[in-house]
Length: 302
Figure 1: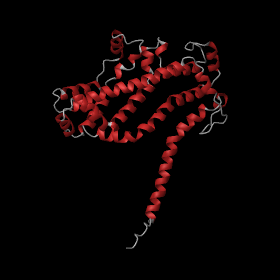
Figure 2: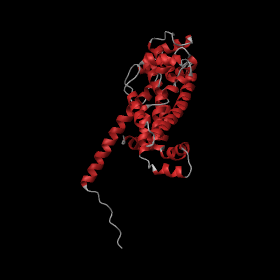
Figure 3: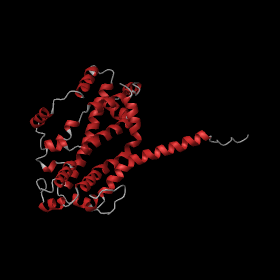
Figure 4: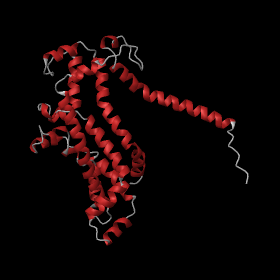
């Protein structure tokens, strides 16, 4: 039997490949350039940064900007609080959203339609900032760590996405498990959750990014309790002190304010951007393989 002939690319195929490579290269440059530019400015000497003209490589390489940031006494404490709220907030939010989504995905749940409608309404109607603040005050959440976790336990969008994914699973799996004597919690934990890894990874990424980047709630509810302020809030204070010329109003150490006044706000801003971005960039590759399938399969059903 004769061997199959090798595929001979036509002229049109070659032109398509060249155009495709050019377009993808442009997309890569447009995507990477802003991040590389921020990294270069953060690694460039402050006095040289004000001259401008920095592209993807620093002109005068230095770690001074990062050294000045990490000398701030509240940074390490804020880092631990941010890590703690990201881990605990993501886990608690994922479990609560998936349990509610599992309940709503059950055809035999009589209040399914009412609860789903109520969740959707909360996406468009809010009590406002002042009522929420009063509620948290009456619940004694102000000045505590749990003000970061408890209000984010149930997110309507996350519940709807997970429920839509669960609706696509064969209900016969649950029926057969019940015939074998499994209760609802066993079905949820040992059958449904393992099949929902793509959508759970997607929601986990949403929750982690939201918890890690959040700083406004720290400003509102724990601004006067430095033991529970987050990394983003502390970095915002450093940047504000730099832009205000190191007035020292929000920096505890006087010498720290003096050092900050001698540094370009642009360099500090870029260094802060790198500090808050890198942890999420490290986490994303571990969830990326589930991300696309979780979004597509979990969002196409209503």
